[in-house]
Amino acid sequence: MNIELLRDVVVMVAGKNAGQIADSLFDKKNVNEFIIAKKLGLTINQARNILYKLSDEGLVSFIRKKDRKKGWYTYFWTFNTDKALVLLQKHVLKEIGQLEHQLKSREQKRFYICPSCHTEVTEETALLHNFICSECGEVYQLNDNKKAITEVNSSMNKLKRQLEEINKEIGIIDEKKMKKIESDRKKIEKEKMEKRRKAQLERNKAKKKLMKHKVKKIKKTKKFLKHKKIKKKFIKKPVKKTARKKKHSKKKR
Ligand SMILES: [Zn+2]
Image (cartoon, rainbow, N blue to C red; front, side, top):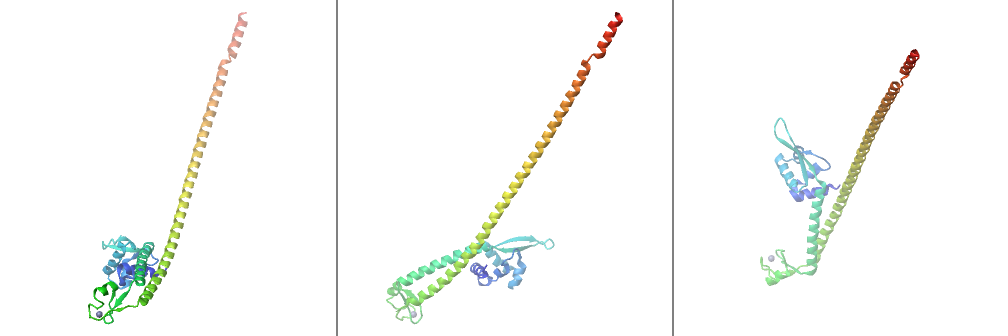
């Protein structure tokens, strides 16, 4: 990650003196605001002002913790690199657009310059003032657009290189995000499978238990029936009675 890019965004949002905040927050999480202020040689309020400005644009986020003894809050800051890069990308694209517009107008239009006070005007303005500088009365001269065109081109190339770098960094972050999403998805899928497997296991266990219970019941019933049968058999067999009867009848005879 090119820290220059982050410094550029911070400066763009919070001013020249804020750039160093990017260094204090770079590649870290939840940085104590007192450490940030100390590193930048600022008072805590000055540091907070910068951080709030960055926070308004979504470049930084914070968590806060209450000091139990003193009763005040301390803020801990984290740089949102992805958001910062997107904001910078937007800004650079806008600047490139403006330069392209300038280039077009340099290539198509004529500009005049006052040799004395070096103010440049469009042809329409020069015509309106009869080619006489309204500031000093000197006669306007046709300005050479070549120099301006070279300057605009050079600025544009610089911005385009920066944009390339920004896009590359955004690509890396996006790829990381996609990988994280994919790994999270796999993790959830795995957890679901595990849950399903456990539920199936529970179901099987319950089934087994039920079967065992049923078998036990059947066995019990069978045993009971067997017992009953024996009893019945036992009761039905009037062995002694017939014997006695026979005996009795024998006696009678
Ligand atoms: Zn002039």
